[in-house]
Image 1: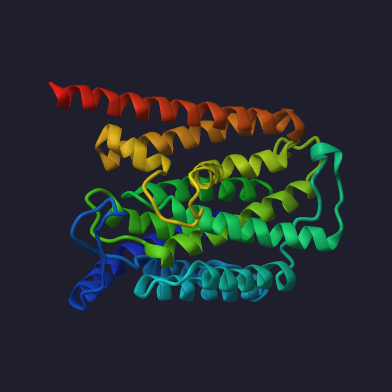
Image 2: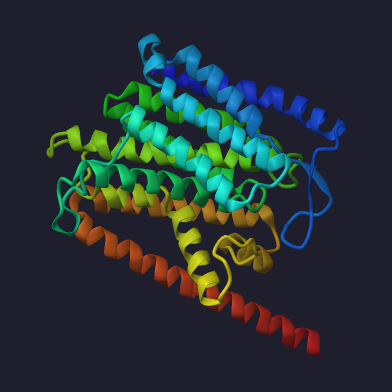
Length: 357
């Protein structure tokens, strides 16, 4: 517990103390995220806050991770560094999606094949248990790339990505701790601490954004922790209070908001006949912001909803199988999407009537 507490506090402290320095450097060199048609913010605000998050995460992880585990996590740290470099490059000069995908594919492959982090079973979902190794590797790579980009896409308003990331990481960190897996718990809490220090400067009105440098790294670590959770859960006895009978649903619950929002927006874009990778303002947080007109309110409401749903899914996943919990999650997502669309249409209809008067 001492290692976990100090890893979180040290990461938070480093992030909190060095973020103003990064803001000053970025402002002096005029490295801004310029507002525009596809941006929510106005004016010029520095990005790349993820650089300090990564610094805080790496230094604290090396300092507090058990000595032998640091070397075992070397492949993971190497893959994270690769993703971070991709983010820095994209924050400086945007990269085309194909190039980003290639780099993410390499980073995901390093974790799957060299760090031996891969899905080995579907744990009874749709009647499937063990799966071939090649299929498990392919699913793992696709999962890591999808979650990495899904988390990147929800970084659209002040504080949202950071708050959502902290909730998911702390949940997994607590679970790993009680499951007696200290290295995984330290990893999750250390990154959560780095994000917490950054969040002070990213809350509305933000003085810095995490940029792709931060969102890609956080998404990459979250996806890796998701696979760790699946594999750790499989080693626990079925009678354990920590054991999930629906582990796949549990991972989906932990990452529900980015997964739901990404799938929703991709389907909508394809339905409209445009590229699913084309940037727009159709995300859930964009629609909520137009109705509530407050970054803080939207962030708090989405974060609380994410946490409450996570608790509910946790309860269900301990007593029900994936075959029963997954349909519940899908129905919830469909109803949520319908609610969002109805409120959005009603809002603009009422505003149009008001303007007509």
